[in-house]
Length: 288
Image (cartoon, rainbow, N blue to C red; front, side, top):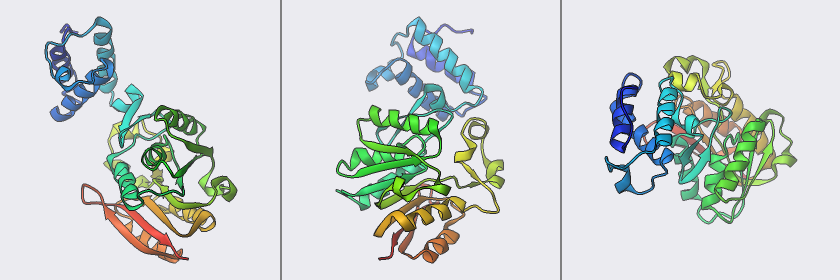
């Protein structure tokens, strides 16, 4: 390998050398911090940046293995099997999307607008369960239900609920054929459904295209709102009058989604910009 990894300084040198053709320097520094903390179980900041901090031979071997996987473009979250989402540890695998910062913004908005909420929240297309779990962790009096069509996703979502010591009911269900009784009545519905159009694949990196589940990402250009339309049909039966609906959206689909919510008798409709100033969330209230 050309370098002997004995200290944290060696790890940083090795990763910089091995990953420089795949990642930019700031990304490599961030990856190095993440790998050092995870592989070496370091929690103290002064240890993380102690260049002389010793590395065991097993830890060195693990770092080298992970670097090899990173060079293929495989996301570090899948390599490590977990990520952090809104201060929750979320396990992920090839059946679940990697949670994005934009989705943390969706959770944050719901929490800010519904402090001390005590009703039921329904998370449709829950995936890893990150949204439902983060909401449950911060709204202890609320009742959370997450629904997904994937058995594997439901399984890992249940693991994540246990891992984060929260109570969430995860149920297998198809958004297009969902029995309203399985969902139950809710005062809030939230969803981050597939919304990337097939034509937008050209703009995406191989780390997404080659590793993340396409069924959780993509929709056809001819019917890009198919999931939103299906969820609104569910909401017609299960969302309480005056209840709130929150969607993560494609930044190009704000106007048609406003029209869709208006045609389904929603008011107080608002588009919320994300940290990058892109239209990322739409919310509305079901008319009484």
